[in-house]
Length: 400
Figure (cartoon, helix red, strand yellow):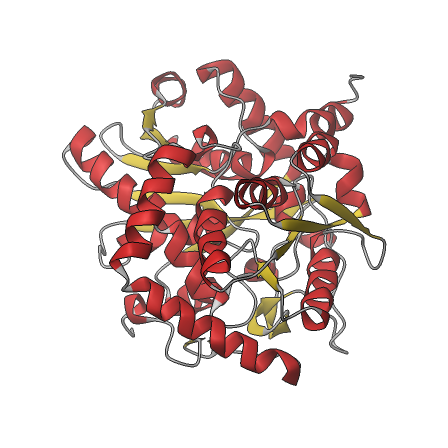
């Protein structure tokens, strides 16, 4: 197996995945962004500013919490939660947005654009734009606007313009399409903050690096709490930023298994899911080669998930490589399993998780019951569930 910690190469490839598959007008801006980011990675001033913002603005380090009640109920492995839900804005997305906003400021950009599904990346982008005094437009599918009204209102409170996208399935894929079109037309003054580890190089690497603070902290914290590394890491995967952020600092620890949990929707056999690593194939989408859901004629399939943040037909190229190399395993959890895990964590630990994170909790519940009490599962609780109250109430037939 190739050493995954050295990836990507200079052209943005993770083995056969990644790269830059974009319009000619974006090649030079992407090259400039890659060079600017390469300079910032080794600039002590940039690193110090980023670290200060993560500590004093985001609220890092986020804690690790031992879910003792849930672990005791299951009678198996001990479940620990990396509490990214406690970050400013309520999810892991802010880690990346702070980093990219500092890049935008360094490059002299006056406007930020972003895409969002569940709305957490949109809120984080609007947050950093407000802080820096930048104009902000957030593209969001009309379906997601309907099911994520609290986050839509938060973005508007922060001064962002929420741009409805009515094409396609009106979800995250379509929002990303529109954001890319905007960027092509406004490249001179606009910085595109991509919210996940997908897209053309250098975005998969850049977003991973900004999110890897999750895994660096978690590695130190779990060693301090338990005296050893976990037996397995578990994180939900849509585009895959919270998962790669947790996984990456553990890649050189072969004793630590890694499980990425995709949205199984109504079941893989139904075709109504968002699980390209579990039931897709390699292809090109949104500027990179990766696993995706497509028909034989190359058209992208419509996806389904109760979770807006996982409702995406592709995945980051580093996850595609980790799947093929065998370093990480990818599984699917259904809507029903995620809802059951959501309720179980609420009642056992007094923590309301995001629907995205509930998929990871569901996988932990499956695994823990068949493991020994001295084994450890570390789950990335990527966000809080305030935004999902309407979706959950609708799914359960409860009026709000």
